[in-house]
Amino acid sequence: MAFEGLADRLQGTLQKIRGKGKVSESDVKEMMREVRLALLEADVNFKVVKDFVKRVSERAVGQEVMKSLTPGQQVIKVVQEELTALMGGEQSKIAVAKRPPTVIMMVGLQGAGKTTTTGKLANLLRKKHNRKPLLVAADIYRPAAIDQLQTLGKQLNMPVFSLGDQVSPVEIAKQAIEKAKEEHHDYVLIDTAGRLHIDEELMDELKQVKEVARPDEIFLVVDAMTGQDAVNVAQSFNDLLGLTGVVLTKLDGDTRGGAALSVKAVTNTPIKFVGLGEKLDALEAFHPERMASRILGMGDVLSLIEKAQASVDEDKAKELEKKFKSMSFTFDDFLEQLAQVRKMGPLDEILGMLPGANKMKGLKNVQVDDKQIGHVEAIIRSMTKVEREQPEIINSSRKKRIAKGSGRTVQEVNRLLKQFEDMKKMMKQMTNMSKGKKKGFKFPFM
Image 1 (cartoon, one colour):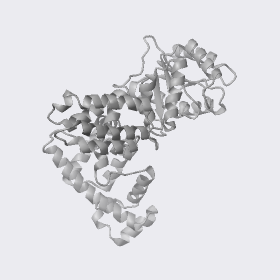
Image 2 (image 1 turned 90 degrees about the vertical axis):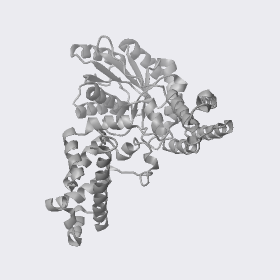
Image 3 (image 1 turned 60 degrees about the horizontal axis):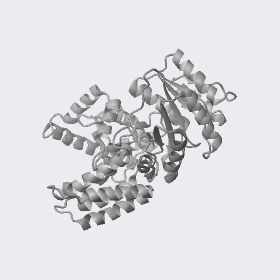
Image 4 (image 1 turned 45 degrees about the vertical axis):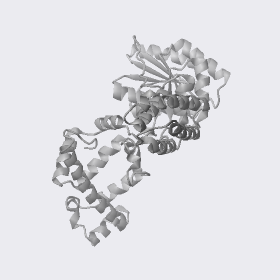
């Protein structure tokens, strides 16, 4: 998960104060010293950290905390609210022009993932908002950029407007918008040129494109892994172009996450979307309050439910729930579950959305990649139909055959059989729980 180091540090610090019946000024001071260090280590801008610590400290020793019944929890609530405010307060929605098409200019330095993000955004607009986007190849300086956008267009089955690399980006933008009006596209996404660094020539050209295209949105695509540099780039582009939003890419990488916490505060430009992987559906709207909850270990159940609703077949889910209750769940059902969960995205990301998942035994450092899931699928597919339905008949000679057929070891086969039995027992308990105390509750994976 993004912000992993920061999340661990903050959660550890807040844990000390969580259950306190009384919170003194020295408790708050000690906690804020730790919070300050955690934020600076995560590469959050120094001035942003200073302001954040000041605001939290003032509120944490104020009336709302000291007079509350649970001061420790109230302090955590203050930290969560201020962290949410720091990242923009509430979700900043994408613009919709009064008269279509809505024009979006995608800008940024080379290597930030601008062209791929343009494709991902078009995909999201079509899937989630039922829009009809037109992709525009206006990066005429990087030879592969036009080809890359056209390849993405083919993968997404979406039109790409291009006039090659001998026509000026200003003319390309102008003609693309005319084309979009003729063909009734409601969004135009202009993939502009990037440079290895900000220069006058690049900015002049972008200003000219802006003048002709009159965009409703100017999105800066920045690589979250560049840390503080991402904030400096955002500030430069904002000063010269007047950005309306930032898209942070590679937020799923091994990043300290400071960029996401600093961008809004330094440039006053909202983070609109975050890229969380390579796939073309790995772009999500940015929700500051959900991200704050995840950083503080409170989970992100809303995003989890949204993912489940978009990916899981409801009829199949009901059928599976019945099978769990009656303990008739088979390896064939398990294969189907794996396919449904895979649609939702990387498993470690999904687990990160569960409240307190990082505190659960065995889930703390879980890392499940597609390769491991592939190994599990290979073992199951090497079983006969009867073995999948009645795993208890799998003796040592059958295990050897399954291991050989799947290219895995007998130990891995044994491990899977044991995990499968444990999972069946656990799921039975969970469905009974949901039937009891929490009537009407449905687990997202069911």
